[in-house]
Image (cartoon, rainbow, N blue to C red; front, side, top):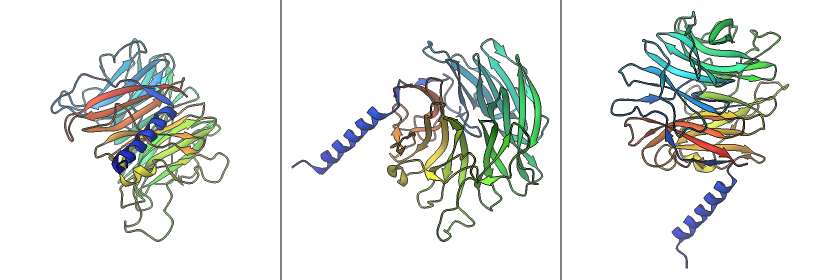
Length: 407
């Protein structure tokens, strides 16, 4: 008689093999993004909407913050398709303390970064030949920037402190060679804010723009969104709640459950997905939930659904990131501790819904692998950046891996 443990392991190995065969990408070996690491040096892949990686043409770029000289500053490194590794990093920020860079790609191997420095939002264009001038927005007490593109313009959303509360603003910018010129600017919510609006992100969709963010108006954190059209680019719909209240009696978590850090991606034709960490099952910590944009229907987004599989139900999920493709390909990544340590997990949308979760080869194992950022290029290849620690709580390293599209 075959021992149960061997039989069970065989089933798991078989299931894993089937999953690997069915996955849309074939992953290479992980490589370092920067050689700068060591005791007391900490890297951060943090931005509203988790946009720290972008692809222009065949060039991939990663933006991060680290404290190598004792002060948090913003850096960028890029990798050309035929290069074995990343270029030497370039310091993007100035002399002040700088945080939470966000990154977006333009055509012709150009990238735009935005970040918070000394309480104001800074923006800068980067090309293969140099750095453009830094544009500093007028708003003081501004933070949590996120970038997107729409109709050959840049969209910059951020939270600005107004009195006691943060309020979400949209700033449009035009690109002229290496120069960025601020254009229309408006609050996303026309009403006077009475609670915090934080961590916004934006996506271009059809002939309009969607902005989503964390909102505290319900007495606890919820995810909300609003939409504008090209006909009235600074007039948004009234904010609508995306994250749903769980059905049934009130649960023992005060006014409501917590949610965190919404990410947005467009895919297919006039489609978009919002995903976030959600604590409605308070007994197991945060799970990954998502909702799909529903064009022409009442409410910007449809019903909520859980992304991770049943094996992830007993673990905590964090740091949601989303990438989409015009072909309809859609993938969500996060980190969770189901195997006893933080690993990078993926799930992709198929004809029958979300796939079983894939522990990304090369981004799992001892220590910690967390804070992923992902992007799909024009060919549907998957680019992943993340933080790695050899020991829990130890110094960080920045890692990158390429997934070649096989489906």
